[in-house]
Image (cartoon, rainbow, N blue to C red; front, side):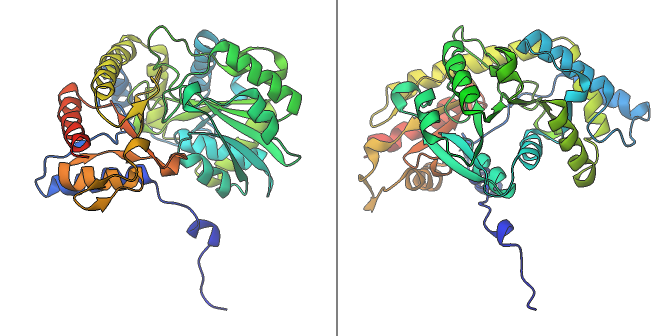
Length: 398
């Protein structure tokens, strides 16, 4: 028998966001002044009190294995957070702490999917959703929202997409990449449809603290017992507490699902980092003023970026109400030429911007919209201004 590799592994698409970031870093290493709009992480330091909690964990010798699904202390802190912020009642045996948000999602789909089960993925979507579903032997089913509806999908679209193979739907609010937020009214209607169709909802609420313009985050599981028992609520500390490298994600679900995820995690990775778990307790239970300061700074950058991009030719966008991204429609430049080269997609525009203008943006074919790009405002206002000047120069040349 010939030595072969896994066909499943070979079918996984590399992350285009990480590829863009890597290419920008390579150019910077060559001395180029590259402005990177690809960032999927806050540019702020982790809060000092959180860092000190980690240092204390090390000096106190909290460096051994913990229970596979996380410490009781952190589970209780997460339950308090769910109660206070999300209006959700979870007990510690319903909580699984994972090695980041991606790991949490992988745990969820490994726990609920059988081969061939379908998962509805609203578009535009975070590019890792389809790959995570496929790695769990599921089948992604894409349903696309209209720009006029801020790329949000409707209950009617969900019901139409459901088949006898549908197991779950992913609902990401606030959204990466669009920044859209589902209102309570919209979520209640979607919840009714999910209960009617009797499927799970995987609620990705990673950006829950980052909302703007008076918008409030609402957890779909909070409405009633019927939607609660069908929901796996996923979140983490990466975005709101600037802890991307600490790798702490978590889920709230039924005790039955949590038990399955805990068992699988015990064989796959064992426990999340012990030191990061101590830091996470401090993040959740300690002062929250740094979270609010980051949110306010993101909002200032958001408004500045919208004002600048709104005045540029050939581009359009729906106002983001959360997260830290602007989802820019480049459809008007498709078919135009730049220095004799025809632009056929946002990927072509992204290549030109990086190679000729030293601006790194994220083309969004892997997010379901090949004529869009994502701009992150998780960089300084100075960098935002410099990068937007270069993008505007490119657009005015078309």
